[in-house]
Picture (cartoon, rainbow, N blue to C red):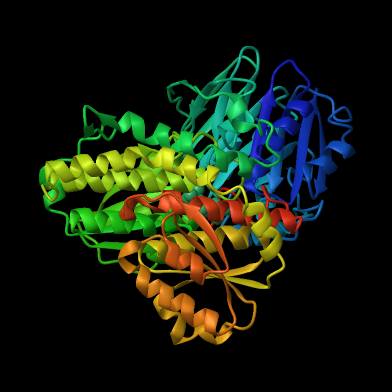
Length: 608
Ligand code: G6P
């Protein structure tokens, strides 16, 4: 959701900015723009729609020469995705140009104040107040002026600023929106995330909230709101650019689906040492765990559904009540939380605004926070008391796949870890279940290999107006994520229902040829789900069942069957979801959808 990038050095800035913006495309956007400074002139170019439009307009950057610049991909919030509303925005005197990710919550008041003082607004954006504040407060010193203007802003921002009086310099500022600095030789950068910069430099400084950076080609000076320098560590990125490229696959989503066995293995393996679970350098004391009387799992989107799957593993092994809460609801729910509550937060990006807000709310009420996050150094990772990285590697497709499965795998490990620490599981059972967790990567690979016919099933189902996903217990958790995957990339109305709830309303929607996707992997409740299949079939539904290999009864009931390998029920979500990801992918492909960048969606939702 909105991406920003900045460069200053000895090379032409525009091609680097355009390339960086392309790498940030996955975050979601509907317009883009760049500003490049040459001597004391700043040239701005913006275009609604895809970055290709901006490349065309700028002749791949050749039309905007200069070695210092900033760029932006905008995901519209305040004002339509037009050329005028696209960033960068320029001050009335042409001195300042700004790119911004985030939301300025007090922009209406600021706008009125600035209009009263005679400033002209060209766009409908909240961002535009920032350039006019800079012009208003300018005292000949860019650094001081940015600090002063920022002190008037409420809300969230990652900012990039250039000023004609200080050529060769960019200023970056961060408050509740992601921002990193890339350190090169004779050139330096900033960006919303590492993917934009990794082909240029692997040396990264993570900015914290309230920090600013003054960046020239030879120097990066990080300072706080009083102007004092802060010494920052330079971190080395270890993953390769290939990890963020398609590698021969038609879409990132397909590549990331295929990467799941490796990603889950990379997540699990380092945490198992000498037959025990070692959760990084985390030492959660037995005493603390004994005092927990409730676990709340919170997240948004697929991460929330990963939490719904993990709930079964934790409750069944640890016998601690687990409540799953959408972060956007939890933050405003006046939650009943104290020091006996453990909050588990899941996030691929580590930057989801609602999840961050829910964490802060719960922390203030005394909960300890465990975060399961993919992006190293992200806000959520840093806010938590205990952070476990999923090691899924960069995930580019907006619809998460390996992000979800690795989150589920970590929750499985956490469940076993807590159960053992609390003595709620005997050694033999612990060892058996640990083996089961270690079998997950192979089972995911088998789930991929066993289903070469999913693309033909997609040809059958892609014209459906609606798809219903049903299941009970662990199968229900998977149905939730399966339906979300389908709707977000294929735009087909897809809903999930606890199979037992069907007859309380939804069955009224079942008519001839209505596809129903039935999750039938949980053996303990299989007979019950099968009766639900019979009920929908009696009303004309066509049933596609997902089940384990030896389940002949389902084969005779359902119209189509997808098989998955049998796994321990409480850990099965990471395997059972795989064919549903594939089905969503192929249905979206049949429908000609923009699979990696579905309309209206953003990868990293950094606003409320
Ligand atoms: C967006 C993405 C989803 C993701 C959700 C939560 O909606 O499109 O794929 O599940 O945000 O994101 P997070 O980064 O916190 O996991």
